[in-house]
Length: 123
Image (cartoon, rainbow, N blue to C red; front, side, top):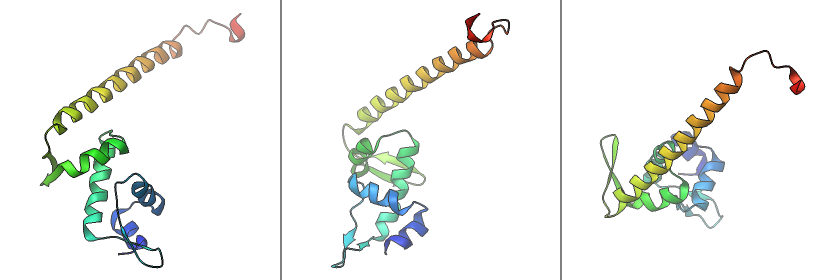
């Protein structure tokens, strides 16, 4: 299928499909004219990429993860040794980021809730 059909089937823009290709996440065939031709399996690959992006993984990590997962129903299941350990490290990275964001929100809440007696300009 050509890129327009891929966009329709996946809901992902042409720009993102090209980006996924640049990142090594998709490898469509090329016609002599240079047009991309996607296989049916590429629709599923895009769905997996979207799932892993939504899970907070970077495209670099996804490039390593994609060949090492298979689907079982609605879940992705690791099939390569070492993948679970890498995903645990990613989970810890995400947890640290969440903790940092919660801390930032608490600081911001303190500023928002500060006594309203202070005058603008510090005086």
